[in-house]
Amino acid sequence: MMRSRDILGFATRAATAYPMRTGLMMLAMAIGVAAVVLLTALGDGARRYVVREFSALGSSLIIVLPGRTETGGVGAGSFVTNTPRDLTVDDAAALLRAGGVTRVAPLVLGNSEIAYRGKLREVMVIGTTRAFADIRNYRLGQGRFLPEEDWRRGSAVAVIGATLHQELFGAGPALGKMIRVGDRRYRVIGVLAASGSGLGMNADELVIVPVAAAQALFNAASLFRIFAEARDRDAVPAAKTQILDILKARHDGEEDVTLITQDAVLGTFDRILGALTLAVAGIAAISLAVAGILVMNVMLVAITQRTSEIGLLKALGATGGIIRLVFLTEAALLSIAGAFAGLLLGHLGAWGLRLLFPALPAYPPDWAIAAGLGTAIVTGVLFGVMPARHAATLDPVDALSKR
Amino acid sequence: MAQIELDNIQRIFQLGDSEVHALQDIQLRIDAGDYVSVMGPSGSGKSTLLNLLGLLDRPNAGHYRLEGRDVTTLSADEQARVRRERIGFVFQSFHLVPRLTAEENIALPLLLAGIPPHDRKARVAQALDDFGLAKRGDHRPDQLSGGQRQRVAIARATIMQPAMLLADEPTGNLDRATGEEVTSLLETLNGRGVTLIVVTHDPHMGQRAHRQIRMEDGRIDSDSQRPTP
Image (cartoon, rainbow over all chains, first blue to last red):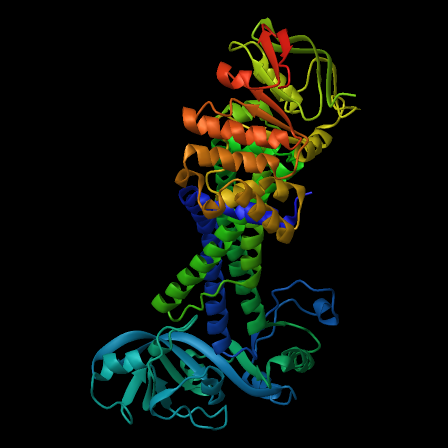
């Protein structure tokens, strides 16, 4: 029987003898694989980008909302009342007792107007405490953030966003100036560094005042949210339990708050973008199937071109099995070469993407590379089977008479 | 026992509605080492006979015994093996693989038989020498003259040291002088004991054979033995 190395050598010679045909077929395969690699690089890059942006917000963040959004079992509190209690500044202060929690910031949110020397505009006002700056990683452009003080005191000071500073004061100094928010006056003690738009709220257009000041401004005793920060990412589950326990104890045994962790939000985005990447990879895989059909076509043409050669091989004593193997090997070689060329092309494309958009980590995931290469080679060989069988069953007398 | 024994061979081709009897009731014995020419007009069945002898075609009826073994009932793979080991073909149009060098063309049967590369190399080098192609080993067919091409083809046909050589118009594509050269090469091989069966149109070539078979309408018309000189 023919040696496998000889089969490989013979098939290689046959593939390289027709550079045009081989080139076209490899190109089709390469485009298919490159599409898979490039598109998954794009999809996965987007996923990683979003995940990274979210992580920058602090992955150990726990947000406490009043009220329950999940339907749970029947608790002792369910029989007493259905209306959730408001979150209060005392609730927030109590959370500092939780061992897994390092920082706590109560949050009051509202819309109001800001005015300075006749200039007036709508703003979003946040009432909070000093810890908020650390939790949200705010950086100060000028001055300082809210002072460390009794949460109930609420001195009349404010920190404003970079855009507000620009609009109200222009190039002039803002520190120490008195602004009016709603019907109250505050002294500007700090300006946030320009940060661009963050997720949810644009820090550049915020006014931040002490929590008690904001409660007075909006005439509300309740909090909008409590932001708590766990010691680190691993401490988040423990911190959540502690927070729940504390609040439950304070709310007469009723679990009437909802905790949102960054991980949950992150997980959702991760899943959505992961599914998107998979879908895109699927679409790209269709081009691989098309390439497979092209492989079949080209192999059939090759067999027609080389009919007399097949006849000769049979006359020289090649069995049908050998002929089949030779042509299948040729198809496989072309597919493999095309697939690896495509891999190279895809990596080049991904590299180009990264050059164009440095923020986007456009690296193709390993599974996509494996799936792309695998699909290419499998389709190439599968679509090579039919032509190879056709070659093996040719009648030698007829085949020899073809020129 | 003759090397080749054909008994009541029938070969019928279906051409549309009509049946063509390419071979009818062929009885033939050929001894080992014989030199036989098969002549006759086009369509007389001589090529079909050669294809049958070479196991490229199967008869519709009758028996073909090669070296005492009934080869008509062998499976396709077994027939391929017999072709590989016992039969060499020489074609009118040479049938060299255009992308392979002379050397590689000659080595093809060894490749198919799974002979290790080292042995292969030695045998091909010997063959190139024997057939006066020593300097042409790395030439591709389109870089060779007609005579050289046919010599490569004959080297390929004999590299496995077959029991018989089947030649179908081996000089048909060559000029007279080159044809003469190829014919005497085949005769030299025959002189070393290989059975030589040549299908030809050329009466001059046909008459050089020891035994001359004339075919007509799928039958053997005449079968004459030239007295050995």
